[in-house]
Image (cartoon, rainbow, N blue to C red; front, side, top):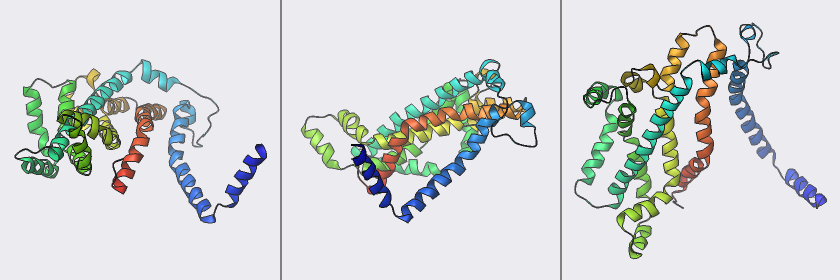
Length: 288
């Protein structure tokens, strides 16, 4: 058994072309180059201050400290800011997926007067600069009493037309035969939406959800305007305040970078398969 496996491995190695070897060397080399800054950041986040200010950088420090992480997790509002950001980014993403998928379904699968007008308005909203909406949007949020609240940040984020546009393009390419067969089986319109369209659109929904989650996670300007209480800050705003009071602690900045990017990295690991599948489906024009 072992000899058979060894011979199979040798056969596969001898059949590898130089071009394939070159491609893999290039890809792994590029990946290593992109990973170097992150590895260096991780190393610096565990180094005491005397090594951080040393003219000779240390990849592997002679001494390790956890003081920066202890400060962030116990002596600052970092945990509260992270929770706030999760609630805002997660809530906005969930509402966007539900509302935008329903809008896209109604525009592609239902027949009602004014469809083209609604679609034209959605597309035209892309041409309106974001900064033009800030003052009237803040006025509306203030009149509704949502200043310094989660909803004051979430609801304006839900109004983005990007999700409708992407899902509209995807839903339009789903063959109508699926819907016709479902109606013959007695499916209602909502059942077609929930049991036929949404499962087929799972990859594009995952890709859209990840994009909107990252976008709302990193949002700075609008949360800065709406959120006035320090305990209600999102992570980007809180980290700016944290930097201002700790300008001479580079190790703290490195630790902040690691902890702030870790949730996004974990989310991407969970959804990377769906994202790759969505790209493949869009590239081949198939839905399953």
